[in-house]
Image (tube, rainbow, N blue to C red; front, side):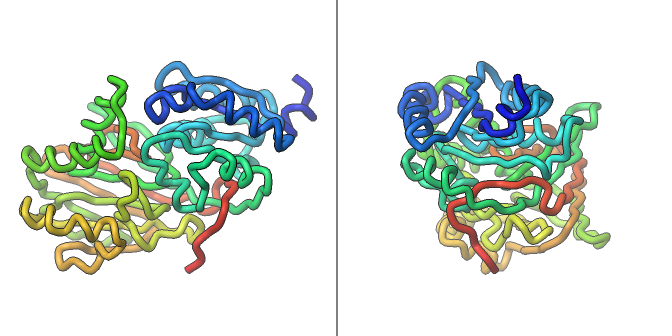
Length: 317
C-alpha cells in the first residue's frame, strides 16, 4: 500500500459486537456518513478480544497514523495498547478519533463526542486535536508480570469485581447500563474489604479499602464520576481511594458517584500524582477502561501527552 494513501486514510477498527451488536447493525450508516463528509477510511472488523490491538500494530507497520475506533471504551483501549506495543513510530505521531457505539461510552463523554453518529463524524471532520496522557499499569497475572496501557480510568477492588461480572455477561451478548448497575448492587453482597498498602510519591498509607480508582478521565461505569476532577492533559493521575464502608453507606452514597461530589465523603480520599503502588494482603483485581486484567501487587504511572486525540470540546481547569 502506498505511503501517501496510508498517511491520508483513517484506519478504522469496527467492533461489530459493541453496544449489543450496534457496531454491526449501524456500520453501513456510519460508513455512508464518513463518505459523505469525504473522510477516507480503511476498515477492519474485529472478530475476537485482542484483535483491535493486533490490527493497530499491523496498520502502523503499513504506514497508517490516524485511527478511528468504532466501538466502546474497550475497543479504544485495545487500539491504545496496539499503539504502545509497536516499534514503527512513537505513539505521539498517532491520532485517535472515536465513533461511540458501546454501552458506557465514558471516554467520549469527557470530550463531548456525540452518541448521534452525525455529530461524532462531524467531530472527526472538524479535526480539533490535543495531546492526551496515557496511564501505564504493571501488575501480575498469576506468576507472570504484565503491562497494560489505559486512556481513561483504571480501578482496583470492588470496581473490578463489578467489571468482571459485567464482562462475563457481555460475552454472552448481554450489555447495558442497567446490567452494570445491577451487578454493582449484587456485588455488594459478596464483597469483602481488603487490607492494602497504598504508596503515593513514596508515602505509604495502610487501610482497609472498598475501591481505588486511577483516572486520566472523569467518567466510568456509564456516567459515574469516580475521579471527578481528572484532566487528560495535566501529566498527573487523579486517585480516589474509598475506604471501608458498610453496604448501607455505599448505597446511600451512590448519588455522590454520579453528581461529582464523591470526594466530599469523609471516607473518601483524593490524591493527584504521577505514580502509585498498591500491595494487598489478599489479591485485589484490576480493570482498565472496562477491561478485566490481573491483580496486585501493581504499579501505576503516567505518560504525559503521549498520544493525540480528536475531540469535540475539552475541560480546562
